[in-house]
Length: 306
Image (cartoon, rainbow, N blue to C red):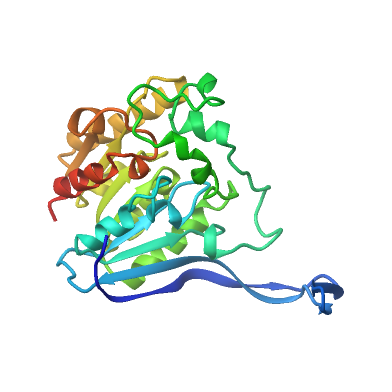
């Protein structure tokens, strides 16, 4: 895939300066030939998002796109699929969109500070990803036997595992604040969110509806706190296949359909894109990485009609 860029770079958004006043200096060995007396006290930049942006040479007239990853992942979610195909980042830039890829607070290149947030971080195992992301039945994990017709390239699940990262369960409000700060830099934007990022995106939109032109929510793990906040915000919700695998997934499927139904009752511009019916069966929770991911993206953009 080739395209010309007018500009690209990175920036941070949001966060604060945190002062540590307790502790005593102690010696550290930073390499085999270098050591010094480290002081844990001082002022530290924390709780910001890291963002990488890409502006194509032939930019279209649509608002910029802000990509918001899910829980336990980071911005690499959107870059390249586990089997090496172009991710949604590249597909969007090729289609002329200006794209901003977010690493949320405490994820990826945003960095983190020990002891700052409540609780301990968790890291998702490959077994949990296999079941939670609906790649196949639990008993199929060891032999990598997926659900029939599975679109995710399960033979490359280890590459997906290498992009998973520890996450805290107590930082959502910080991620929302940082995303709002990103939107203040981009101006009105199309939010493309995945899983936990759906909650972050919905809540950021509720706080600053003037900065969100539209939302594409890929299997969000939470509904909008108030559906009325989307009254003027075109929203497409994408869902995959194999939704009757267990009670948690069935409940989430009902949540998605209830969200769209509530919006329709209020005559809101919301649409449920069921990839089984509208594109092709076999979609996993990681629709942007599935073999029909490009078709999923194009269908969502078409429904926005911006």
